[in-house]
Image (cartoon, rainbow, N blue to C red; front, top):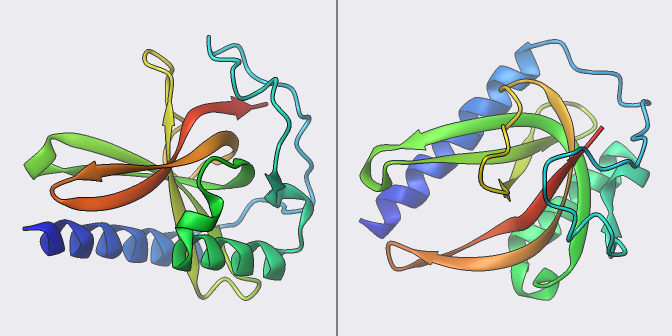
Length: 157
């Protein structure tokens, strides 16, 4: 059962990457304004960012996200800012929707995503929109597996 969830998440991210690579990409030269939206959660917004992926080239961003996925324990507790395409996936066995920011490599052939959780009551962006998220990277247990996501996340305008 725990492997089934991993396979479903992998397939969802893979399908999302394929959809994103077929759709028009946003202008990656746009910069975040750095102002936190009014979403009722400012705990992360006022803290300093440990890893700002928005300041890196597309190749470096993809490489850093790959490193996060391969060695997540090294990033636990760090405040991470990242921007990319929003993607959500509903998983029937947990009756939950999972939200991720997906980052493509420089050639737009490969993608990596990091799950994030906004404060309760805050509206998530629509799929395939570009967003900047800041949150603390933390593990959680579900179905006997350790997963990682950005918590206390805020959307930046």
